[in-house]
Image (cartoon, rainbow, N blue to C red):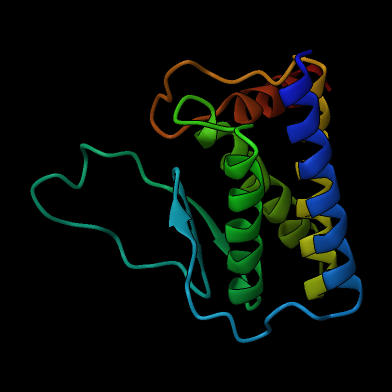
Length: 165
């Protein structure tokens, strides 16, 4: 690994630790206003109505993260976007996998929880970001070269795991 790549990974690790502290100490903005929508992921309080119109079947439906904590989840998406883009760890080729995996982690928690807690869902997302960072560091962050219908490699891995069990 080149020196600049190592530096970028160390910077990202430090930034993630700062985010973890913000979550533990609840110093993140509880009233973050901007909802996340990008790279095939939408974060919202409720599922939107079906799309209609001329091109409604052309683009794949995004992966939705629906939660009463949509503002906090959106905040973390923006923060992690900045950390990984500023350190040149994600780009146009792998961003759908990165954000899709964050969404999958959040949805895994949301679906498995009878009662959601904001710090838990944010920490689950941070754990996934750390796993991705470790994969990048070890040169084994895998992603599909082209998304088909909004599916990411992580979605396929989950289907394979379910078939095996």
